[in-house]
Image (cartoon, rainbow, N blue to C red; front, side, top):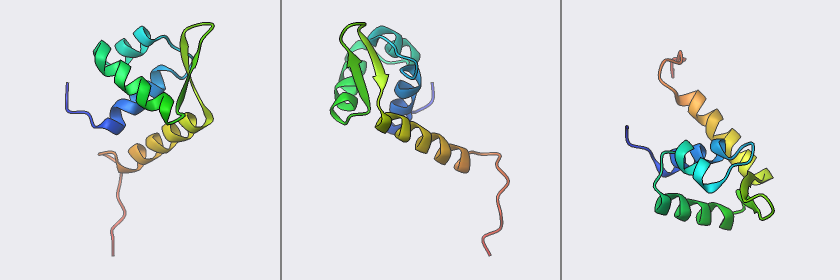
Length: 89
């Protein structure tokens, strides 16, 4: 697997949790180890990007998480290779 930035990993986690997902499903969806997913989930819940539904054990996106994911995907689309670029001058 190619190198992934922290932003890439966070986006993968947000995508994995977009319809609600357990820690295990997120771990497999984002290709992370148990300790990595635990650290990222702690970070992301602390930043109010995800919330844990105690009743189901699933993580869900908050409004902030949805905004971050949309912004990430928009930027990725704009800078992706293969996009026809306009001349700068």
